[in-house]
Image (cartoon, rainbow, N blue to C red):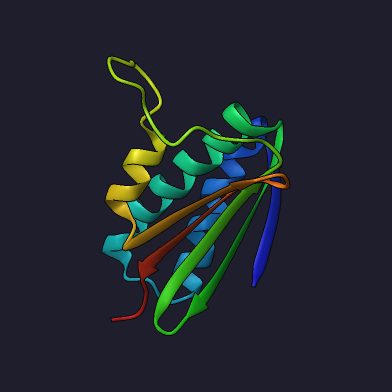
Length: 118
């Protein structure tokens, strides 16, 4: 399991980390772009709607690539009607094979699963 702690200015490093680790886990090249978009959207939410720092962890599990993004804040579940922004979690749900969001006293955690090796 690989871990990266980040803040808002570190989002380019989060994208590089996600791309490198997905490739290392055997994710097909044509899936990496969508994976990086999903990770970026959730990481951006973590440091703009949660707290000013977050943690991303990534690992391979049973042929899938799993990524977990955690921050110490409390998110709302998605965009409000007629909102202009707030689509990050929605976009991530479309791109991930599976997505779960846990919000509690210790913060918000998003876990996403993506197809790994083919």
